[in-house]
Image 1 (cartoon, rainbow, N blue to C red):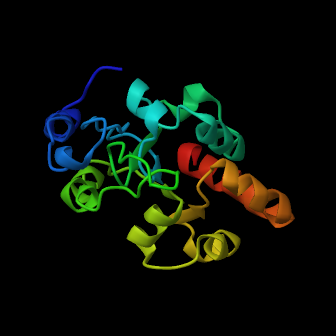
Image 2 (cartoon, rainbow, N blue to C red):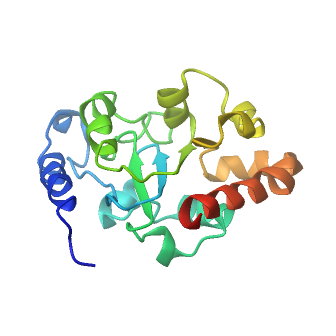
Length: 198
């Protein structure tokens, strides 16, 4: 699609973001901000931070967690990566490294205060924000329990829809929580359709 005048300020901001070195000294693989945005996007996926596969490919959720998230959404890769419809902005834009006992480090705390609000100002058409995982939820909603918020999703509508991080660990909770498949996922797909096409 041809760029419109509203794209140009966002493109300038993205150039600044891609040149960011604020956390470079702490990033084991160096800075590589990964986000997918367009001023016309109607759904925002607020996630955690890129993993190693995402860092390597520059494509958000390009891994098993992305497959699980797309299955929850009932969405194929073509729509998921269509920035005209879907924006993906993690709390930390670069891969933060691993914890000593395994698992990824938290998103760098410098990142969201530096860039998040500036990015959101260029996304005027967002109808629904998916808050994926504890870091996104706590940043937007304040401290709280992820799974409780997921089960009480209705109280955050129509602006936000809290989701657990779609890691393999969540699969165990999902199997123990039939209401997630029976109630939460149908509502999620309904709200996503409303945001995208409503």
